[in-house]
Image 1 (spheres, rainbow, N blue to C red):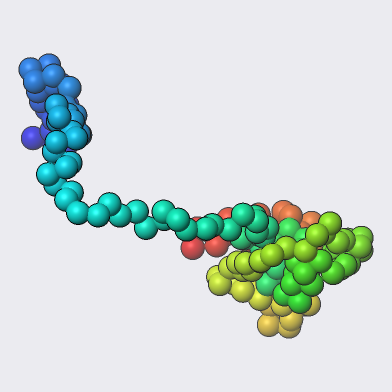
Image 2 (image 1 turned 180 degrees about the horizontal axis):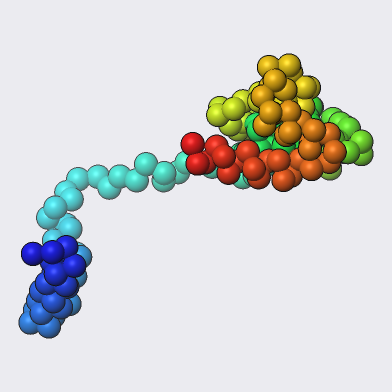
Length: 166
């Protein structure tokens, strides 16, 4: 039997069974007398691990996914700031952004996760710096030239496309 015939037969069987037995339910219906059933099943002291516990009442603010210039995509799309600047910014200190604009949060973050990609980590800073081993390759040289000319976004998209295609 071919795959398509097997699939069709399975669908027909499922529809037939539903028509004969009615819709199936993933849950059992509740008992007619739940209080009696629970009283017999749960004898002794009631337990709730959270009863009487205090919980934090102050929200904590942070960023759970920040990329620095070490990540190829962030660097190629224009982020030239590194780890130190990211933590300074999170602590509420003023930093100078990639485009030269001073930037500061209205209040410091309580926490920060730097989530740089491990794949190609440091590749973009090396390309931006014009490392000779990258410029020795014609593609690397072309990417470097285009980034210097302000075409970093298209270079980033091209690199991401090539990486995703192996």
